[in-house]
Image 1 (cartoon, rainbow, N blue to C red):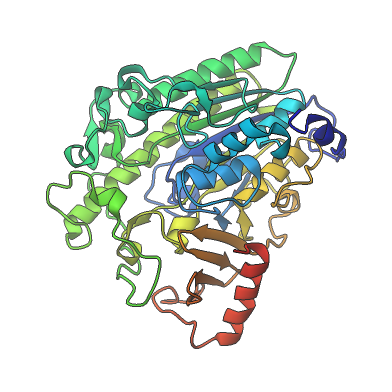
Image 2 (tube, rainbow, N blue to C red):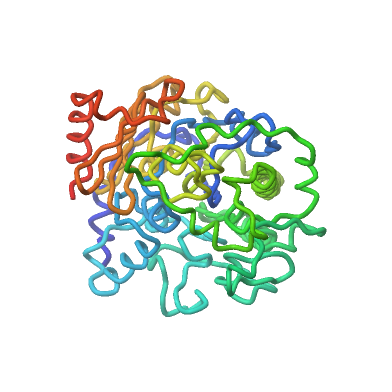
Length: 470
């Protein structure tokens, strides 16, 4: 039975920050395409007061790296604690394996909490498809993305008709059918509910109310906010914060002249851009960046609404809160607008963990950590034991002391693998060609140092082959 008995017997009790309390609740907030462009991560022109407050009450991980620069593959690693394949169908492939042989697949993170007596609820984009279903409009009950994981997996579509419509929806029910006919950014007057995320968070708050009313079981509530995913649409009041604000210069905006994972930014360029290209049009580049920033502030406000309701129910003192960005996003660095590359901007995303009793509250960590570390961290902090099948390692030592060391971070894309150390990033192509960047020196990401440092390249290639064999 889906390894239920084996999994439960393998749980080893551990000390928990909640040892004298009931089992803690978990609130997991996933934000799509969120690069660490937040005030609490050093972007002082960004208005993100609610996320900043969460960081001030927990631990912000400034060197958190995802395993894959695409939504589906990155969420696979979050929800399973395992390295996986590259592509947006990773979780559906796993679901197919469960359908054929449930005993061949280890429990996901929400399934693990569910086995340990939690009510598990997902709202919005937590797995790749908002609402967690397949089919032409992503609403087919017979095609679950994560079998056996959720008690409820929800997506209120409203005017957008179905989850597919919500995923790329603009104001007042506009659905993407032909991206060329949909504006790449938009700012419309109205309340939060004129874009899909307003409905998602309304439903999340409703679920939180229901979960708070049932004190017989702890809950694992995961909420997936779609913005700032393309197209960049947010209510106009969030754009007002950025009118006339001077943006910092885009660092290393040149396209690499050597073999790399650079691409043509097709996901961005396919939208209606009014014939403009941000790589050649500085004014348009700033327009794009301002609309991205507005989406970040919109998402921040929605996070704030959820945290406020958690406080209204007086649940903050018994809840582990995690905010996670599913990958980074280029805003002109390396002449890229999007993700899907293996540069730092695609792979680095914000991670914040907060819970009562955390040591050295508010002090950030600059240790290198990975998304696959979140699953083992949550179960250890909650005192549920550590599953023996995950690839990640618990971050509890860093939660107790932000200066505790991290480890190497590994990621993968289409035809290439990469490793991030404290100082360097090595990208290894399938052909054997390598890119080496010095992440700590001025200009170190604007030049490939591989030929100049063959010994370091060999050492890092060895680490990749050991951790991510072909």
